[in-house]
Image 1 (spheres, helix red, strand yellow):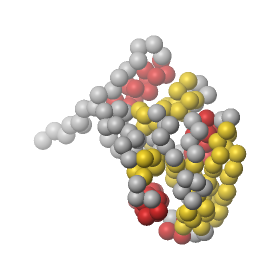
Image 2 (image 1 turned 60 degrees about the vertical axis):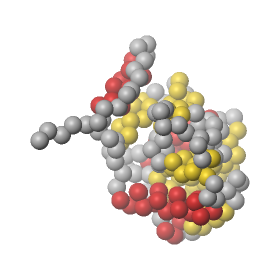
Image 3 (image 1 turned 135 degrees about the horizontal axis):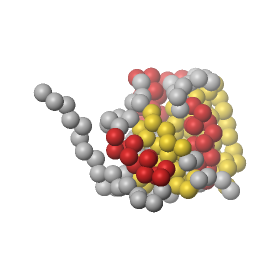
Length: 192
């Protein structure tokens, strides 16, 4: 019995070699792998491990318990204004009003996002700490939560303006950290 990979429709632009390579890589990787275009560079990431997914699940649960009207999306692609054209990223978590993202699109406008979250891995930590931080601020996403497993911290960035976050709060994993409005509740990182 032969194994086949389900087909995915991928639109390939014909005028930019980096985007051509990005879309070709996106079409070629197995499901579960992430292909992102961040500041002009293509990044391919394997599926997350169990600890990573537990943190994502716990964060999702806490947001849901606080406000059941918001949707927590995982695996949603966002198009961000980038330093070298459009960035295409797949945050670990996107929180937005229900119905914000349509199934037929692979890449979405970040405008409805109220919060994005990333959980670092050794292969993605640098992007999460620097390049994605800049991209989410440029897109004016109100809250960015960075769970840095390697550093043992959780940082909450807010008040984006002029391509930077104006406020950041960092705590050690195991402590609580306040999520600013529109959330306005303490995120308990003890479960992370």
